Length: 261
Ligand SMILES: O=C(O)CC1=CCC(=O)O1
Image (cartoon, rainbow, N blue to C red; front, side):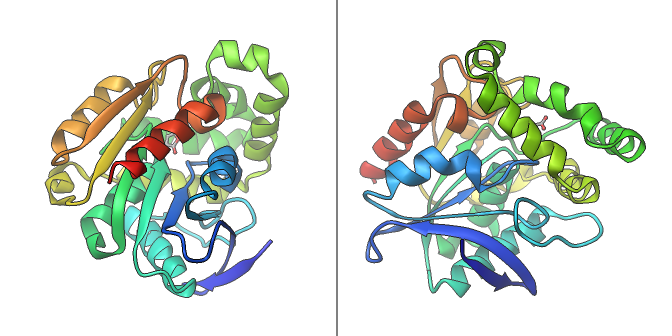
């Protein structure tokens, strides 16, 4: 359970795989933790030096007061790589993690070998939704939104078939400090990479669940079309967090993409 100081914060991370293997950085989504990448981290550690970590304010990482931004969160990722002595990495992110990954490709391209952008978009709106979500959490706490958010993360079929997993992720969300969730939600609300996507110069794979309503396949198509040379894979029977709902398919898609570079 290692921790490292990153931009003055204690950041919780996990690292696995051969020390000489190519580094692969995994970035999680809003309100989750590095656990959402656990199946891929384990499988891909056969061939990669896999680093997963808890974003600021999430999991076991310390948070800060006030709204986060994509630039700030991308800066944390770069500082984490630096602290671990890693110059360049393949980067995969889901949702907010995918927005951070896009920002890394745009602002820190020299640190990025390739990108996997899962269930994400250049804008995840509308802004008013994030403001009302923050207001509801401030008034009633995290519990008020847990069921609605779980229904976006996973298909109804998955929740019925694996209730222990859905409830586990619900418990994770419920335990998140409300102000940290809101701080990170505002990074989503205020983030917009649209006009800069053409600056992404590395090989890129866009992944999306066919039943994702938060960042639907149409958003993934637009993202893929705006990034030079990007490819799109649509995963069947998956909502917003296919790393958990369709772990083997996500691992296979990432493995195939990275093997082809
Ligand atoms: O919480 C949601 O509705 C889905 C989501 C948006 C950004 C993110 O990371 O998750």
